[in-house]
Length: 477
Image (cartoon, rainbow, N blue to C red; front, side, top):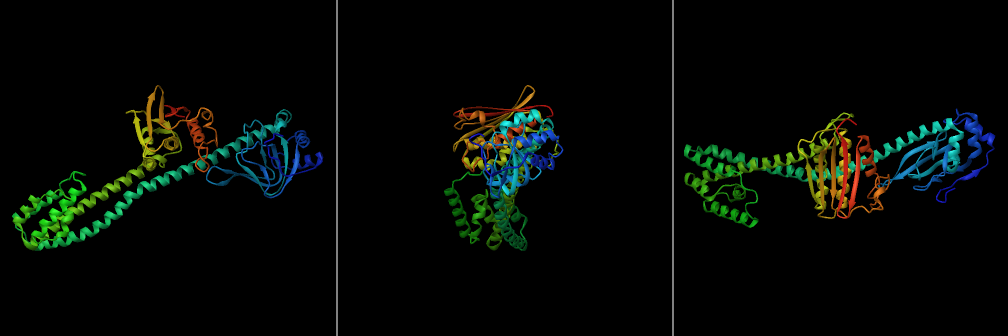
């Protein structure tokens, strides 16, 4: 037995004839030819396990092929988010190293959950098992395929849940500001509308002449004119409020409207012309009506801007997840998928103070693809690039047609991938990130999804320049 292998449990002696009879009653193997069952009985050994024993340890070479005679055990895998159950086996199942399997070590800890008895054929005898037990081998190959499918499904689920967590965190961060702005501005708008209604009633009671109404309209138009954002420094804005406040106090008008008026494009000469046409309470009512009316419109525009930002984020997430697409390959706008992915990662880009560029060739033909799966590829690759760069680093995303292929490149100016590590980066569970920060599945998932689209993924890396290139055929996968 390999020195790294785990052997636990207590060996028990079972006569070959009795063991062969038990195998005849085995749910999965009972229909095998008697000679093949006899071969198993002659070349295997039986162990009894108690609850809590380990049949295999994560990363350690598997002892061999296991036939579960009785009991129950589970494989637990820790992909950086805590240990959880992936698969389970009971009496009547088979497990361990199967014929033709390339598995080198256990992907997790295999824990006995109730007293069990297991027949094990050492891995060194598997080549002989293949020669001597052809029907058994054929059955076990099908079991191996089903097991690989189950592990793949579990890997994809875990990685999607991890991506969903990143997406949710980034989206919550991005939505927080515009959502807070909508709530805050809507509250101010309600208060401003009350003031504007009171001023409107006062204006109506004043029975203005056509000349007076024209003067009020001139000031209102000046207030509604667009101001250049950031045209004045905070000190200049404060001086503007003070000067308008002084003008109001000099005429006995309500000085509380100085702030709203200062936020508009109205000028003191325009206010002077209004004061020539109106006096006393009528002037005060007109100023309040203009100030609060213009403020209400300004607040409504702020709500519209914040709402548009929320709509943009929701549309990006909808496009990223492809929630309205069928589960078949369809013409997919790769450029839009990259844009949606960058939108949902915007919070991480800001947190890293990174520069991210996107260069998508105009008129890029659509790829026949599963849009949601491609976006999963872009998310993993761009997220890894952002992890790699230092604060203030750079990530460049590009997409172009090259012959009959569509090529997406994601480059970063991080430290690069060591040459000794480069051949292993697509291996499942391999990661260079600290414990708890990486599952080792991201690039494995990327490779599988690219292969599903009949594409290729290549990587070139040196200090300061790492490029992942994904090539997709411009036809249905």
